[in-house]
Length: 112
Image 1: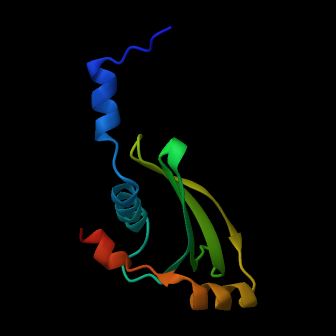
Image 2: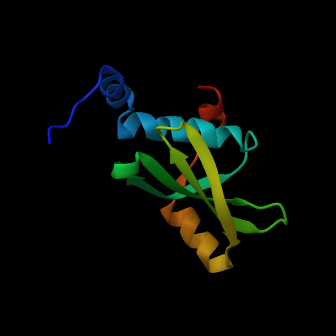
């Protein structure tokens, strides 16, 4: 059986962003849900190529006044950022996140 490709299917495939483009958009969307000037460290970013999805773990001060690790998923095809949950960090985990993570410039991403 021969697979048929329609113009609509070809257009959809061609319009998917590169991993780098979708990561930049994920950062812009993440910045929208954060407070300007807030301290946030990105501690993990993982790309799932078959699903054109980024998983981003960030450390920030939670609503209860404790440092938390939050997980987000950005679906590049749907152009949607999902919140997957959070967990509190111990003091040791927080220190490790600050040392090993990358400081996320919320204001710079909000201004893009």
